[in-house]
Image (cartoon, rainbow, N blue to C red; front, top):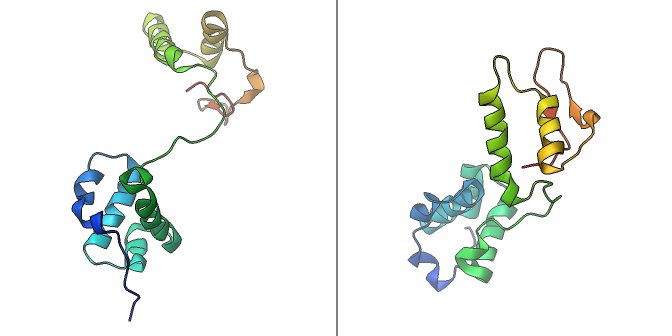
Length: 147
């Protein structure tokens, strides 16, 4: 017989199914999992339904016990800071779109964007950081953290 799951008293007052409808992907998966647990499913069943590991499901419950609903929400991830700060992000996108609209025929090339970044935003990067997959496909940005 499976071990009885010990859940906090306020666990059943939340409507995790409704909360899942307004959240982004990772948090949505967590809320759906806790909704299944509310409905009497075991950790193993929830892990199998959601294609998650058993330890991940146990961790969701532990985070809920320790921090409540906020413990389930996505936290800020660490990483390399963007070269184009948030205030420039919208301006950068608008500049690229304006460049495309003003172009007579053809498309905006990587070289055009590179020149615009250097001139208008003082963002410089090396050409070899942009990889051409082959001669017929668009280039991929690999190491450029603009967005």
